[in-house]
Structures are given as C-alpha cells and as structure tokens.
Amino acid sequence: MKPAIALLALFTVACGGDSGGSNGGPTGPGGTPPPPGSTDQINGGMWGSRAGLIEPNSEAAVAALNGKLYFLGGYPASRVTQRTVQVYDIGSNSWQLGPPLPQPNNHGMAAGVNGRVYLIGGQTSDISEVGQVNTVYELDPGKGEWVEKAPMPTARSGGVAIVHGGRIYVAAGRPPAGSDFAVYDPGSDSWQVLPNLPSQRNHVTGAAIKGRIHVVGGRLGHGLSNQMTTVHEVFDPQGGGWTTAAPMLEARSGMNGVMAQGCFHVWGGEGPAGMFPDHDYYDPQGNKWVRLMDMPTPVHGIFGSAFENGLIWALGGGTGIGGNFGSTINQVFQPSVSCQ
Image: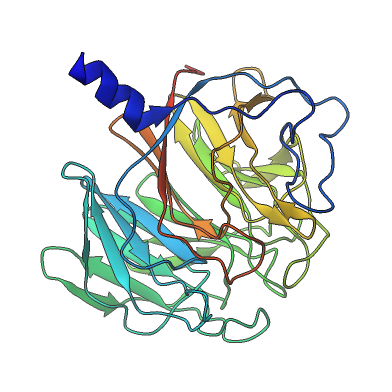
C-alpha cells in the first residue's frame, strides 16, 4: 500500500469548489463571476507539488533544457531586481544556484534551444515604465557562463518567447513595445523584424501550435491595468500574416502557458480585482477552449513553462496581485486530456 499512499500524498485533484465558488473568476474582494458562455469545469488531470524554489522571486523568466528548468532573475517582496539563477533538476527533484545573470533582470523572456539557454529583454527596474533592455544573453550549461549575443531590435519586457523550428519568436511587451514582434536565429546570431502583433499588449502567453505562433490574453496598459483582453492571434511563419482564433474564456493577464499532449494549457494570472485560479486549455482541433478545475494556488508573474516527464511545471510566481508576493511553491499538473 505504500506506493499508493505516496501517490496520493504527491498529487491532489484540483477542486474548484462548488457552484457557488469562484468557478474560474478572480478571487478575493471584487471577484467577478465567469463570463457568459463559459464552459463547465472538468477535471482533466491532477495537481501536485515538488521541491520549492531557493528564493521567492516573481516576475521571472523560465526556460527548459535537457531535463532542467532555469528560473531566471525576478524580484522578491523587496522588489529589488535580482541576478539569481535557480536551476531545478527534474530527475532528482532538487535545486541549485546557477551562474548569476550579467545584470539584474525582471519580466524577461527565456527559451532553451540547441543546448543553450537564452534570456531575452526584460527590465532592470521594478517600475513598469523604467529600465527596459534589448539584451540577449546565452548560457552554455557546460561552460557555466553567460555570453552576450546580438541585441533585440527593440527594448521590451513582459512579452513571450516561443520556440519554433530552432528559432525564438518574441511577441508583445510593455508599452510602447506592445505590438513588437521579431524572431531570433541562434545559429546566425541575428534578428528579423516581423509584422506587428495586431493587438498591442503585455503580460501575455503563447505557444507554437502546428507550425504557427499563437499569442493569447494580456493587458493593454502599464502596471496592473484593468484593460485586459481575451484576444487570441496567430502568426503563420510561412505566409507572414496574422489571423485570429477562438478567444480565451476570460480576459486576464500575467498568466502562463505551455503545450501538453497537443493541448495549449493556460493557468493563473492577475487583475485589479484579484488573482485568477483559472486553468483552461485550447484545443486546436476544434478551435475551442475548455475550462479545467482551478489550480490549487493561483499565481502570476512567471514567463515560461515546460511539459517534461508527463508534467506541466508551474514554478514559483506571485500569490497576490502586484510584485510583492513572490513564492517558492513549485506546482505541477499531470494532464489526462489530449488534443492529439
């Protein structure tokens, strides 16, 4: 019976409460009910946890590479931007500190490609309008040092980095860079400016789905803006144009997302009314969103995730609105749904 007991201790079924509970809307004072036309919640998998982070930073970037997750920069409750690199080994369920970043960074965009970790853009100040950078840093884990690469065409933070075909597409950002869109080729260490994102926004998430770049949600203004959106825009690298797909079930910002078993999972987020515990997935086969049970601890402010070892990794994040609530929690979700 011990294996069964251990499994039950490791995973908890996400339970969004009864019909009188949050049902996917913001929690806390001022929370709103789910939007008209939203779907009923389904189970879709199990939430659990793993070893907590070393430092409670939020507004940080995450990249996955070779069985490890790299948690880059961010800031704690003091809002002093950090150079800290926290490295999680999935196999051993353990953390260690990696080579510090060349400069403090929050709201950066990160990706793991071809044996290297990249940190792109971000900012050095906790003030939303201040300190955006266009820097690109590359880490070779084998050498253990960061190397500066060709800078991004524009300085920006709070966007999303999406890997497709060995290149890194970087979309959106805090004003005035909310429509910026460019792709970085690590092989040639060069950038190409692409057609602007139709809807300017920041604190978005996105994914590569069937050869196309999907960018969803976010907010339109600086700081904790109440101008949030459900927009879902899709870029075709072959044709070079943008189209739209089914909008998110609810407008929110600061959420995170990743592809798992053909589905695009999106969870968490924040708004002026409170935190979003929502966990939805987009089914590209039917061009529709499905609402899953809420995540146990709503978080926001983490840019990047991974689907590794059959688990979606939701590392760290702020547990309250704004930048003062960084945590060390390490949540995982084992999906039972498939869109393949």
